[in-house]
Amino acid sequence: MSKERTLMVVDDSMVFRNRIARLAVDGRLKGLRVVAHAGDGLQAIEQARLHRPDFVTMDLTMPRMEGGEALAALRTILPDSRVLVVSALADRATALKALTRGAHGFLHKPFTEEQLIESLRELMA
Image (cartoon, rainbow, N blue to C red; front, side):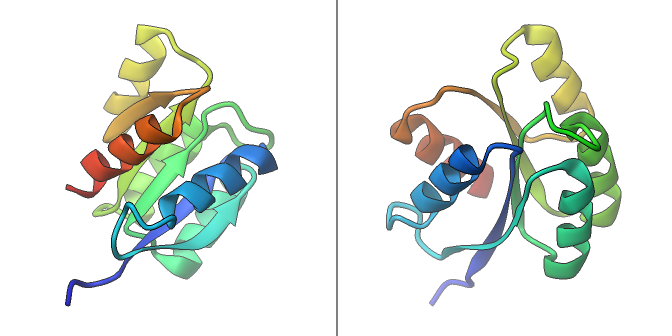
C-alpha cells in the first residue's frame, strides 16, 4: 500500500480553493488528501507549519501576503514539499519568477479539470 500524501490549497478565492480540493481527491489521484486550505500567504505559512503538506497549490495574487513572498517562505519551512503555482497571471516573466522562487510547476487560470489533474500528477511524480 502506498503512503498517503497530503496537499494544502492556497488561494484567496474560496471557489478556486474548493474546486482544486474537490478535483484533487476525486479518485483520479490515488493517495492524495487535502489537509489544509489558506486564503492568503500568512495563513499558508501558519497552515504549512501545522500540517507539513507534501504538496501545495499556490495562487500569486492574494491579500496580506502575496503568493510569491509566501512561496519563498514555504521553501524554508517545507524544503521537501513541491509547489504548483495556480495563477491568472499568465506572462512568461511571472511563471519564471515563480519557478526561481521554488515552484515546481505553473498552471494558468482558468484551467480545465484535466489540466489540473495532469499538473498535480506531474507535481506528485
